[in-house]
Length: 158
Image 1: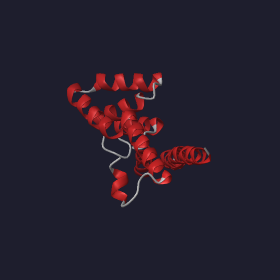
Image 2: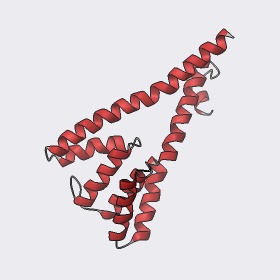
Image 3: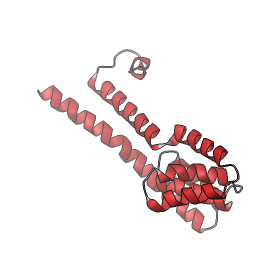
Image 4: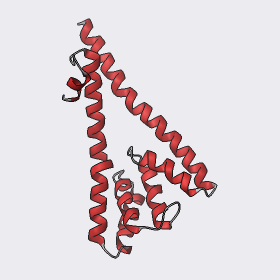
């Protein structure tokens, strides 16, 4: 019984640790990006927003979308603006959903823009990132419980 309790505690710690580390990094990137954006250093702001956006941060995805739409730190690109806005809209926030719809109305080739959005969702969409986090948590559980023995490759196949 004690082994089960200890294993459960380790699993809980592992599952809690990964999002906390990612959240800290995301929050730090947001603070840096916001600082650079306010200073007008759009290239650096874009770099830090992008790091967080790729980790599923909807605020940063929305900022990347806005920067593409306004040509801040990147050449103006409404297709990329729309694609990132679709990811941001996965948050369910009404203003982000409205922004996405408004961008699509401004685009000359909506089919191409929707295709770009789907490709981006396949890399950084909410469902994909949640699946990656679950896989990572499973691996941590296997490693901590000892159910994954031998080479590190054995853990990767579970």
